[in-house]
Each structure stands twice: as structure tokens, then as C-alpha cells.
Image (cartoon, rainbow, N blue to C red):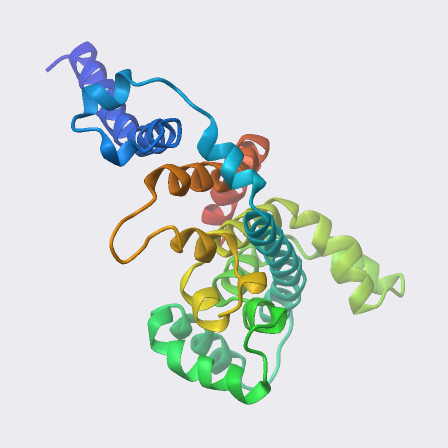
Length: 273
């Protein structure tokens, strides 16, 4: 098999994979632009039907949808800021400092990575009840301000950075906080960008724990609010897909704005030892 045929087959494979990823977005957009899409009998009739924006105007005109959107945005931003700060501090400590029990503690953090979130669902819910945090922003923010993955990612990146600048700053009399936030943090910008985007998207799309910790409409996040378009007897596909389309806009904008940083950060983090 010559090089040209291999290239054609490779591009064909990539096209099939890309089509498989794009089709759900196309299907969501198609359903959101049809009035009562569940009433159509075939894909052809659905595709050829007239386009309407009623589902989008209904979703945007709903007071509850605005609350869901703002809740998701506020929680996502606060959790992202917390993870950038605390994961940087923890990662720096594990990469540069020596303290009693460091290997055991770091091993524990790595062990937490393999624990499915469903395992901590009941204990964490009971803890939120004891604290009186059900239906509060505390339950949606505090447990997620630092993540094991973030600590591991930042620690691996910092270990690959040279220590010359930090040593020179110490000789000049700089303290550890100054070194961390004025020297190390700017050098960690690529990995912190990746971490921030990863955490924001994870919280933006989070459903399980916001669903458990909230039972009032004004505290629901966007994924939880969209779930209520699914009834016991039927599903409001038009409004559900319109809401999902609107909720996907911040994700797409983030990727478009930071796709270079995402690739650079992941590549740099993968090469650090």
C-alpha cells in the first residue's frame, strides 16, 4: 500500500470520526428549529419542514431559564477560580517542598482519582445536610474548589520548570508567597489555562450533584433545569434542544478562544517529567 492510499484512508477515517461528532450537534440544531419535532414521522419530513425560532424565544423568555444560566455561570466561574488558586498552591507544595508524609499524601490524591463520583454521592449528601447547605450555593461550590486531577496536573508541570529563577528570588529576599504568585504562577499560565477550562466545562455540564443538592427552582443549574423538560409521559424535544443549544454556546466560545492554549498546555504537561 503506497503513501497516497494510506493518506486517503487516513483522511477518510478522520472524516467519519468528525461526522460522528458533528451529527449530534446537527441533530440538536435541527430539532430546536422545528415546531413540535416529535410529531414528524420521518427524518426527511423533519428535515424539509419549515424553520421556526419559537423554541429559542420561549426558552430565552422564560424567567427560570435565565436563573439556571446565571447559576451555572456563577458556580462555574467561582469553582474555576478556586481550583486555579488552590491547585496551584497544592501542586507547588508537592513539587518544591519537603514535608512529613508527602509520598503518602500524594499517593492518596492519586488514589482519589480512581474513585467514581457515584461512590461519594451518599456520604457527601449527608455531609451537606449536616452543614445545612442543601439549596445553597455552598453545596454547589465548596466541595469542588480543589480537585485531585488539578493538583496532579499542576504538580507535574511545575516539576519540569527550572528552579534557577526561584533560587535567585530567594537570594534577593523574596518570600514564598511572592515566588509562588509572581514567579511560578506566570510560568504556569499554559497549564492553568487548561485546568481552568477543564474545570469550568466540567461544572457547566455537571448534573448529578447539583440535582442532588438542589430542590428549589431558583437554585437549579442549567443541566438540572433542562432535565425538567423530560416528563413522565412525553419529552418536549423542541424546547429541550433549544435550551441545550443555548447552553452549548459558552462551551463553543471557550474552545474557539482558547483552542491553541488547550493544545499547548496539554502537550507541555504531557512532556514534563
